[in-house]
Image 1 (cartoon, rainbow, N blue to C red):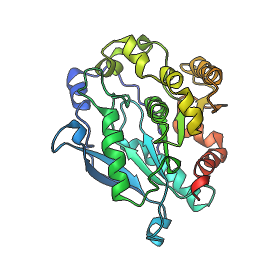
Image 2 (image 1 turned 45 degrees about the vertical axis):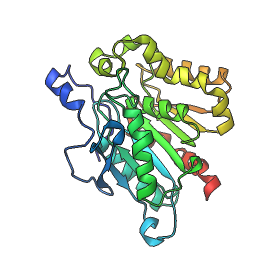
Image 3 (image 1 turned 180 degrees about the vertical axis):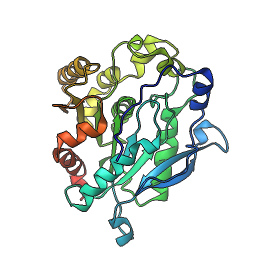
Image 4 (image 1 turned 90 degrees about the vertical axis):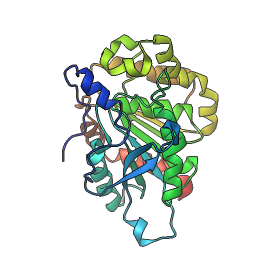
Length: 295
């Protein structure tokens, strides 16, 4: 199985960037093992617009057609796509079959490779709106989900980790569990390469801060405490690019009295598979605890 990493390509051409900004639908329809490729309407982008996603349904979904299941939305990293979650599906499926992980539905979100899971400053790339207003309602109508906060989690890696925190902290009554794995939440916009950020944040530090996880935690601290969000942040101890930032964010959440877990995983860097494998079975217990109120 290929490792789930966030590729760091050389500076892409303008033609490549232009293509990335249109990839709401993955042009590759191949279905990684255990997943199905599907389309859904995205009226937040206009009439007749569509997006795509991959979905994993647990073994019990077909066995008991009356049962409803919690959902975890999985967010890919920068320059990635929904297929980046292929390893994650096999990893969690094995745990489900071994009965160390609750049966859940996984939705691998196809978001823009450089979209950051927020609405762009100019409004042309409404990634947040598409996920919150279009994708989640579609999933709840189409599949037997537990369509409430206690039955909904979100996890992401790198840029997807930023997205998990952005969406989870902004919408604490939508997501009951938030898992950010090596989230790219650097304090200064200039710490990220310009070609990764300019189409979303338009080089505007104020907007970057406004929609970022640091500010959202402060703005929604009371709601997050009231909603009892199960929040965790996992960091590779060898991820020198993010190590100090994530330690500071841990302190920031403590200062705001927002309950959370923060773990630095020894021997792991900025690699999703490495982090989860070295974290071990505690990873599955997090989801067990997250969904225990609906079981």
